Every structure is written in C-alpha cells, then in structure tokens.
Image (tube, rainbow, N blue to C red; front, side):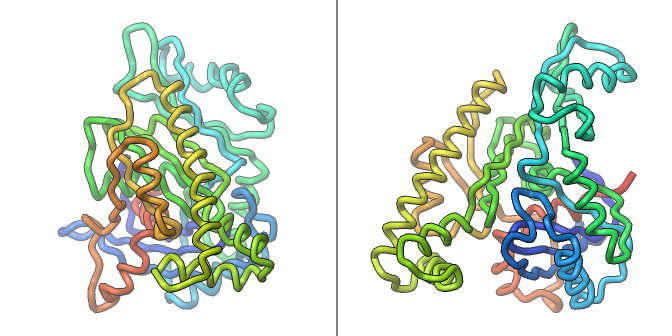
Length: 347
C-alpha cells in the first residue's frame, strides 16, 4: 500500500474545497511540509465530476501561490459516481492473462459501457486459493478522468498519478495505524460524499462512495427554515461547535443523521453480502461532518461497532514552527485523503 516519493503535490479536489498537501520523507518518518485548503463555489464539482475546469483550476493556482509550492508533478483522487470498485472472484491464471479476462468480467459488474471506462485491477494476495483468486476491479469513466487530468494540467502541472480517494484514505490509515489483522471500516464524511472503505490485513477489499455528506444538512436546514444556504451553513457550524441554535436546527440535524445512518448501514450490509469474509471489527471516522451533534455516536450505536476518530497525525510528523498545534487540530478531520495522496508516488 505504501508508495513514497518526495516530489508529488497532492490535490484533493472535493465538492466544496480543494486541499493541497506535500510530504517529504525524513529519517524520522513522513513530514508534512505544506497544507492548504481553498473553498469551491457550489456546483463546480458534482458527484466527483469537474463541471467547470477553468474555475477549479483557478482555485488550484491560488493554492500553489499561497503555499509557494515549487513541485511540478501532482497526484489527485477520483471519487463519486464516475468510479466503481468491485471485488470479484476469478479462476486463477497467469498475470499476463488477467487484463484481457477482466474486460469480459467487468461488463457484468459496471453500469457503464466498457468502451467508456479505464480499467485497473489489483490481485488480493491474501485471498487467493489454488483454484481461484480475488481481484479488486476499478473502473473509472474516461470522461470524468480526462477532465480531472485536464483541470490539473491546465495550471502547468504534470498529473503523474490519479488515485481513488478511498484508496488514499486507506493508505493514510495504514501509515498511521499499521496493518490490522481484522477488517476495519474507514468512514470519511465530507461535504458532498461519504467514503466507505473496508481494509483487511493491509488490503482494500470494499470501497463505496455514498452520495451524501455535510452539504445535505445545509440543504435541509435551508429548506426547512426558509433561510439562505450561507445562513444554513452558519447554523450548522454553530451547532457543530456547541453554540446555541434554535431547537429546530437540532431537530433537522437529528433527522438528517438518520439518513446518513441508513446509508452506512446499507454499505455494511453490501460489504457483508459481497465479502464473504470476517465481519467489520471497528469503525474509524473522519471528515468535516463528524462534528455534527450525535452523528458519530449514532453511527457506532446503530451498527453495534466500536469507533475511533481517525487521527492522521499519529505517525505523520509536522514542524511546529510551520504548523501550530491549533492548525493541525483544525485540519485533523479533513486531511486524511489529501495526506494519503501525498504518501503515494509515480511509477
């Protein structure tokens, strides 16, 4: 899972912000050198698709300028409706034959035409038998992929790697927590998407993006209370930090929590049906929306699983002269995907 290169700039392009992260590798371990976040206007990225490459590129330029980055090679993550990750079982065969066989297998598992996607795969080594092997199939819509690369390269960068955001999340987890001997679930609740990833013995065995996140709370508050999106966002943030808000806001948040709980429960059910292996032993939660009142404890309770807040700075170092503890604490929940990207390298 670990691929190191000190020359990559990581760009985590979400639905509400772009995050830039740069990591160097020192004798003491990976060291965060740069990190910055810039907001995106609504609808510039929808469901993982960059709908306005010029506007998103402008935000990337602002990040590069503000951080004074000199790196020219970039890595970014693909997420949302344009990417499908599926574990499939195939007869055991020579490595050279897998790619051709997958084209036939993929047609029954992906909702896109085979000519519309780019296919990649990873053989899950700890699940192979003498007669069969488990393969993690990744299918990405070429339209989404090319537009993402175009956006990054339009600012003068070379897009050396496009990863899956869920895989980057897992990469960051393993850097900080090591290899667990039982399956664990990573749940990253962002603004427009919730990444749900199951990792078992160092390998991603299930990865699903749920099309719901913190922006849904904002939308529900705005709709129910007849306020603007800006006012609704302010009310949501106030509730998240424990400030006094109208009881109606708390009621809307509780109701919306139930929607998130249903989606996560469905994802766990999908995993259980598809994996045919050991059950999930623990949840690790991250993302800017985990501070919404009651959400994390409700997720844990409703699934009968213990939880821990994912701390990406357990093993990733930072210079306190560059980043204050207060700043690191502010980005702790929102940084795992960007940091996971920054831990990767180009071939």
